[in-house]
Length: 304
Image (cartoon, rainbow, N blue to C red):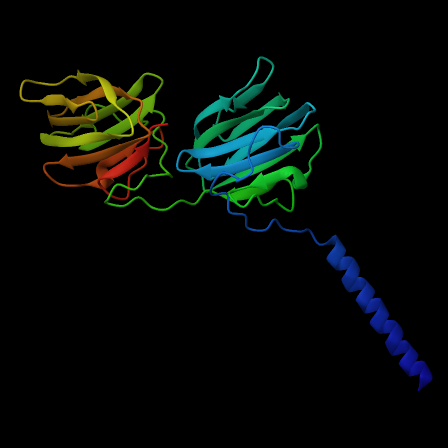
């Protein structure tokens, strides 16, 4: 009986040890972090760290140090989408930020010394993956994500790019990046609006196939002004008017060709209210290089 009990005890100890070893070897998973909102304690002079967050203007990465200079490098990859606009924040001559040819990765390498450095970008991706290093080492404890400044469990880590859907009241279409002309569309395409922005400003075009259609509407600037409005291929009965510094109204009759106008703005957002033959049709509005459709009209796009 003693031998039997001893055997059972040994078996229990061996099983417990195997379970412990298996748990130790099992890869940990990054908890679900909410990247929404700037971390509350972001300021110059904070000890060496990364800050990562997203808001209605896109994604942001910042770095701080205390009194010593540190080097920050890494790769930001987007999953299920492309990188749109991106810009640096207080970079110096030797600092670098580069996008790859497929616009799916941003690689960066820069130094921070007492101030705040970093970069911003926009994406229509489903999620964003961060592989971050400071002084050549990965350290999750110096990464702070979102308003609550939570740290990921592992590096690399992946954050959701989910956003609230735009509404008819004009909610910002956060998942739609207006950068780049819609590909494969031009004169002779079926009835549609084309909207995009590039280094030369904003562009709106209208196309039809064989039948004539009337395109009308207005564009309104939020917290800024519209300027340098220039009509493209319009006819006698067509008109594009800067009604006031914040609002453009238009009426274009397009028949087999391509019409439209260009403009510039310093606004934070632009609200589009567009009609084809007097009807709201979001399925024939194409935005940016990915030719994305807004889920509703009117809709709002970020202009920053």
